[in-house]
Length: 227
Image (cartoon, rainbow, N blue to C red; front, side, top):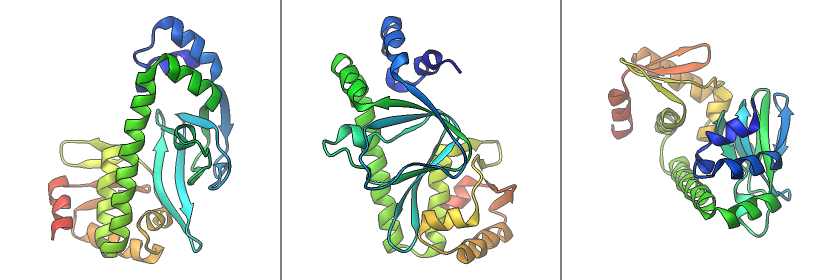
């Protein structure tokens, strides 16, 4: 895909004039990573913003015992923004590809020059970063205050916001997830995830096909958190 065409349809750059887009496009590097490749590691210096042209990336932290998945991003999303917004420029988490992934990469020096000319870009990135921080704080509270079943249900509900395809009878979470990945997102173990998903299927509130989860009735599923 042409970089200029991709950026023209990216929300951060929607206010730019054609001439600005033409100047911006050459600043982006294009990198392709095979599945299971680290894009960067927690604690490393960081001076790049990444936009996903195609593929899937997980953001995670190592708590000393296991990986804790904080977020999963896919096509047309971005990550790595905190290293551009903070003076320290140190990665607060790690990023790893879940499938073959192509990224557009913008260096901090070019980012700073860009936002001086177009302050709205910085504002949009900051708003998204704050929203992500709020969701991370909510997830942290869930990990400490809620039981495993509720954590799994709430995590699936969060995934419907980002990856849900809404249909007449329910919502398909358009993301292939292993039981281990779900466990890493909810602070549980794989066996617990398998047990809970089986229970939810037996209750006929979800279906699992080819590692994708379909929520049969969203309103009924939301009530599971309230119960």
